[in-house]
Each structure stands twice: as C-alpha cells, then as structure tokens.
Amino acid sequence: MTDRRPTPQYQPNLKDISPLLTGTGIVLVLLIGFALAVAFTGITIVKPGEVAVIMNNLTGDTQVQTTNGTIVHLPFGMTKVYKIDKTQQPIRMKGYDGVQIKTNDGSNVDMNVEVQYQIIPSEVKTIIKDIGRGDRYKQGLVRAYARSIIRDTLGTLSVTEIADPSNRDGKLDESKKKMEESLLKYGIAVTLITATNPRFNSDYEMMIKKRKEADQEVRNQKSAQITAQQEQYKKVAEATRIKKVEIRKAEGELAAKIIAVNERAKQMLEKAEAEGYTLEKEGEQALVEGKNEAEAILVEGLAKAEAIKKLSEAYEKGGQALVREALAEKFRGVILEGRPYSLSTNIDRFRLEKAAGAKSR
Image (cartoon, rainbow, N blue to C red; front, side, top):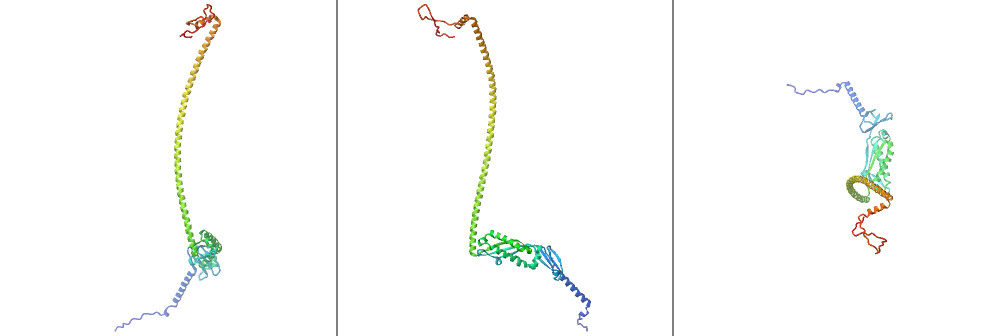
C-alpha cells in the first residue's frame, strides 16, 4: 500500500541564518533611517511668497533667506528653519470680534475693522527673536496693536462725528501712522486700515436712518436741480447756437449788400467820371469857342473904334461941311413939316415933330 501522507514542508531555522546577513540588514536599516532623519530634519523647502529664518542652535547665528528654494542645514535640531509669509495679509475683526469704541460722549459703537500688513523680509528675524515662531506675531502683535490704537484714535470722536465716513477715514489714517511707528521696529509694515458697518444703539440707529433719508432727499433735490440746470444749459446752448447761426446769416446778407452797394457806387463813380470827362471836354470846347467869339468881338470893336476914330479925325479936319454932310445923311428921306407959332412973317424959332407913321432913323 502506498503511503499518501503529505510530505512535510521545510521550515527554516533562525539558527541556520548567517550572522553576517543579519548584521548587514540591521546596518542597512539604520542607514536608511538616518538618511530619512537627515532628510526630514536637515532639508527645508521655501515656497514662493515665503521668507526663511535659519537659526543655528549651536552658535546662535541667524540667517535670512528671502528667495524660494531648498535649504540644506544641520539636522537633528542643531539648526532650525522658521518660515513666514511675506505677502500682504489681512487681519479681520468683525462681528462678535469687532472693535468696540467708546466715543467721547459716552456712546458705544461696534465696528468691523480690517488691517492689511506685510512683513519686511530683511527684518523678519526680529519677529522670531522677540515674538516667537509661527503666527504668534499676528495675534500677539498686529491684532493687539490694531485694536488698541483704533479704539484710542476713533474714541476721540463723538457718536455723531464717528457716523460721518469722512471723519472716520481721517482717524483711520491717523491710526495707520501710529501702527507703522509701533510695528516698523518689528519688521511689519501696515499698508491699509478700513472700518465698516458701524453699529450704534437702536435709538441712534433710527436717528441715523432718518438722517440718511433726509440726506437722500437732499441729494435727490440736488440731482433734480442739476438735471434742471443741465436742461437749462442745453436750452441756452441751443439758443446760443441759433443766435450764432442767425448772426452769421445776417453778416452774410450784410456782406452781400455791402458788396452790391460798393458795386453800385463803383458804377456811379465810373459814370460820374465819364460824365465829368464829357463836361470837361465840352467846357474846354465852349471855352475855346468863347475865346474865339471874344476875339472876334474884340476885333470888330477895335475896327468900329478905329472907324469912329477916323470919323472923329475927319470931323476935326472938315469942319461945318462934314457936320452938314452928316446931318444931311442923318435926315435923308425925312419929311419936315412945320407950322408957325405966330402969324408974323418973322420966325424966331421952329420945332421938328415926327409925322404920324414916320420911321425914326
């Protein structure tokens, strides 16, 4: 009969393992562990936006690395690397964590506050030495200074003044300057402080609401006035435009009339000059004719004068004969009739009378 019982498997005995192999494995494990320990404790990666402070716990030296990259340093706590965010960061205090301000007239005002700040990389080791590692500086330094300074600065206002954004903004600028003076020595720069959503007691909230409604009504009225003024400006501008157009049109018509008048005046002047030239020529001709006629009359007068002169000379030389001859010539063809003034034959005088119908010569 065949024996069907299972053949027993070989079970290694630890005594059979070579001591050399066992020692090698332990060493290998230790080396790997050491390498891992060195990797975890002696290598630090700095990400973009971070600044690293490398503190040597053996010598006490401190170094700052402001660029990102890998830092290889002494492991096992002989050196320690602290990383801090160097980008702009906010601290928000709102809601139940908001800043409560006691105004100068005794009112309480709760306000949401946000502070924007940024680490100065070259001064970051001051934070590690004086404040501690991690984010301790955020709560223990930035937040504490912000709440204290903002409460003190805004607390100088009355509740009415703090409700005015322009007053708050002025005091927030003052708070920013005070925080810069306090935090700059720790390597922290404050870039902006904002305060929003002020919360007053219910009575004052109602008063503010009514005031806002009144202010809105005033703004609406001002807006309506501005709209009316703009409409008026448009009408004035349109009227001015129409006036300018009409003025240009009138100036154009006037210029055309002036041109026409000047043209007519030019024509009249040319006509007058032509007529004057004609009259001048006629006058010159009449003057010549007058001179000629005067010379003719002068010649004729001189001839008559010469004849009279000669006759006079003849009378002087001829005596009574020439007189009688002249009288005879004078009375040639004249009929003499007479009647005596007396019946006497002696006639002392006689008178000549013109006969009826006789022509005198």
